[in-house]
Image (tube, rainbow over all chains, first blue to last red; front, side):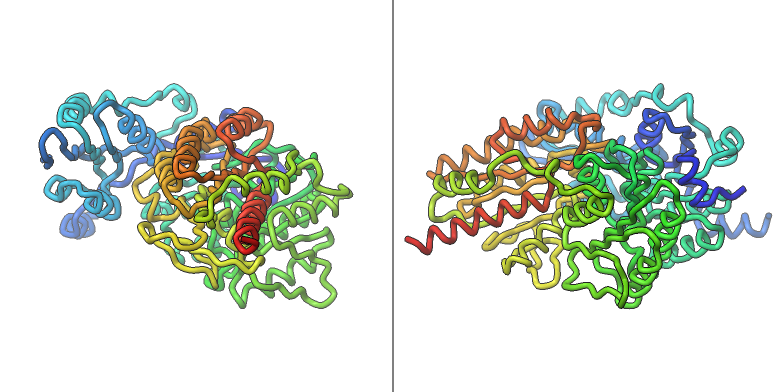
Length: 57
Length: 526
């Protein structure tokens, strides 16, 4: 489902937050619905392993 | 491995595959730096830029060689026992209060979207290297995006914005610091009244100052949409700005539309002016740093030189007679005269130290409009390039939120450590006449930004007095009576430290210009 910009302005933010937890806390404190996704950088894999995975998948 | 002489040492500790967000790490570094025996502390993810920053700061290259972007690095300089004590008990310094967001946490996009299917916006503030991918996932899920992250490639920005436009969505950013949607602040934002004025801004602190001025004048904001600093460049073509203007034109709660930006690209400016001219509502544009802006024939768009002028024009369009509610309740002319009397003949120059990049930019424009020149690390055309360490031989206006100050270090809106050191240096600067500061309140900003600077202001003033001079201090406060820091308390703290408090950066800069103008006049009279 697409919530257009117009719908965002009409409804107010219903947010998903990735990254700085303070932003989620601030939205929560303002009474806005928010889910904070616990984010971590994807593991780095070297080129050989990536190539091996490509052949296996 | 550490290195050091005598009892002093510098050392790094690495925690493999431990990720923390940058704001948390800044708070850790800030706490560590205040421990007895610790002179300097950095806590960063070991990205290539951060590793370089630590090497530049003199930390041990051998210890950093094996670290990757997924690893946490703590770097400490100080007394050997103090550094060892921290490293021996490192994990206790990395504990965070999980309660605040535990009830609203999800482990994946999928879980978040399942638990909150009505979601309509994603706030993305992960490191820039990963930000485009996460923003793209958000767009695929049908969400608008508030993209706080910077260091996003311009081609990625263009691709994201084109994709958003096709779906009727907006990407606010990258490098978008602030927005207000239906009374709710995203990122760094002040608590402002809802009202009839809609804003589209490529600058975060510009958006904050404008919305605060409108609030202080008794009116309010329908929505204030950030677009990211590059949006009106020709590379992007104003995709988000134009979408935001059109949305505000449709929005029933918006009765006037204001666009705040640095000068757009030559090909993008006509598109912006044409869209504004086509609006049925009053429109105001403020292009900070622009020499002159030509309106299309028949356009009723008002062109403002400063954020204050833009606020005044929007308020007048809403029927407000003036901006008197935002005026400083002090006699600036009388203050200028009294301060000038206390200075010695060496004192000539303004030293501006800004947390907000737009404030540095606007201050330069105000000096330029008065025929003055200045050095800056973010110079406007016709101003001089200044870099940290250069001798100050003219007015200097420094953006302390720029990369050279914030790479791996807290932004001055969050932590005043670096700005305090620069304030103290102004106190040792015999030619400094006026210290010009901004203090930014609101969600996301430091808890007591005025208090964090007050002691340094006092000490800088005492330094000038010891040389038989006097340092004038002018601070503008970007904030409202609803902000969590308490506007009145912040202003009182600054006044008690000896600062003249102004309600806007433009007013503060004008007062500084008047003061150095008076000093110049006094010298000529002698």
